[in-house]
Length: 261
Ligand code: ADP
Image (cartoon, rainbow, N blue to C red):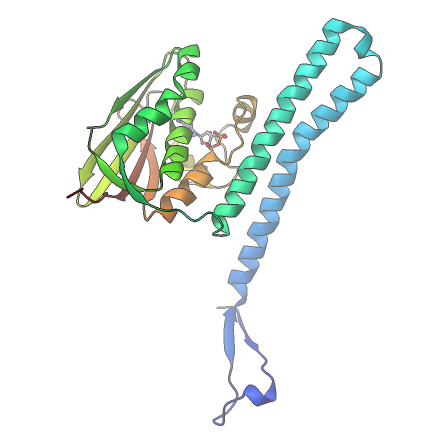
């Protein structure tokens, strides 16, 4: 262990000798490295849309405004990139609030089938555009102890990913079962899946299997990282494996909700 003694003022030394407090320098360096890395990644992610917005507005001001058709294209680029920036900043703030403990969660007893229906209902339009079929196989009355907004965010993220990271016409299923005082919730698709070497890392901030495709589809690379933090804050865990159909299979376990008396 790379540890260094922390010098204390004379009056705080015990009668028996010098009090030495050890801290792990290696761990501090590791955390500093992670922070630096995160800031570098975040800056890079923010820079790309900002550069597009600047280039498009410069082109507009440089004369493209006089050509309505070209102008429309550039304004669309600006709009797309502004939306991307908005999403990034929202996700970054969310992550920082969750990590800093500023988003207290209040787990209550929820019916998972109701929560799943509500989350999926908002994604049906997007699924239909892609010809993707989303099924829910959760028995009514499956009780889970979770914060409603956090559970909604997790479900939305996993189902949205399953729609976006699979080809048109894919199949997605949300299922749940109770086992040993826990509820096991799975979101599985029959898309290309996540190669085993990437499976542990997709929960890291900004980690993507295919960065170009993820950005093009509007992804921020933060969704799974946020989901993992939320699941863990509710005493659960989340993993991903490859399902029987070769697609991604996300599995979450959460404590069971209390039965109403
Ligand atoms: P993104 O905004 O890119 O979706 P996420 O943190 O939600 O960021 O996901 C991280 C990466 O995990 C994605 O970029 C993608 O490579 C991979 N991924 C997530 N869900 C799926 C899925 N259902 N099928 C295949 N790959 C997925």
